Length: 65
Image (tube, rainbow, N blue to C red; front, top):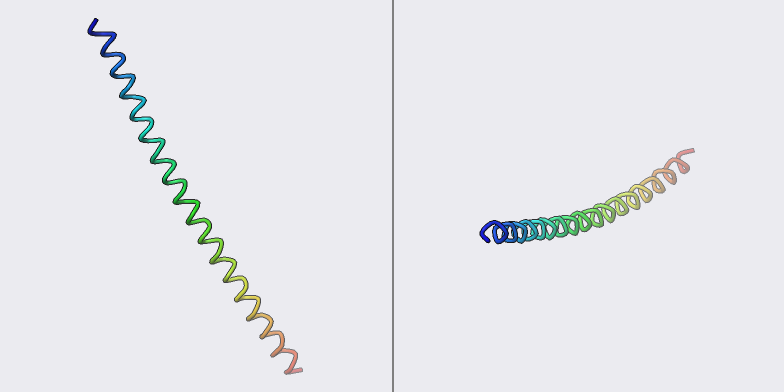
C-alpha cells in the first residue's frame, strides 16, 4: 500500500511543478509581448522622425539649387 500512495503523491507533485512552470512561461510570454509592442512603437516613432528629417533635408537641398 505504501508504493501506490507514493506513486500518486509523486504524480501529483510532478503535475504541480509543471503547473507552476507553465504559469511562469505564460507570465514571461506576456512580458515579452509587452516589450515587443513597446519596441514596435519606438521603431514606428523613429521612422516617422526620420521621414520628417529627410523631408526637411530634401527641401533644404532643393532650395540650394
